[in-house]
Image (cartoon, rainbow, N blue to C red; front, side, top):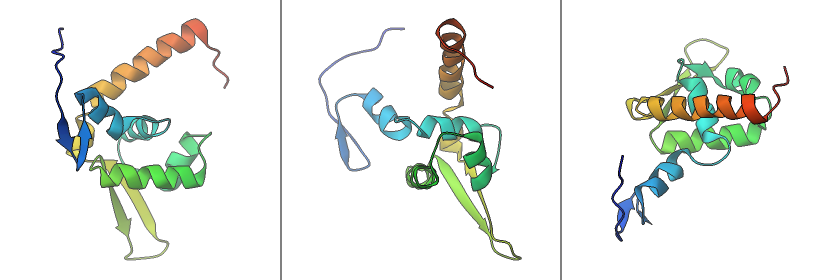
Length: 122
């Protein structure tokens, strides 16, 4: 696959980017965004479910990353208030679901790296 490289500017969400890869990394880059998204590929999750699955994230970081993913239109937050206790669920939007092939490829590559160069600790 050949990618065309030429000097240009792209405006997305009122920010300027020189490359489409920069736009993608703006949306899913960083340590936690893609991790949260990969867990949501299997369906809705509550905040505590995500927190337990991602054992090394802090509550504050999880909260901030969920807000950012929601702002970017990759996930939705649904609050159920009809009867206590309050219940909040997160799920991918269709835009977020469009990342499935990318996230799956990254995860598969990560498995190869872990098997060849890492150590899995249960």
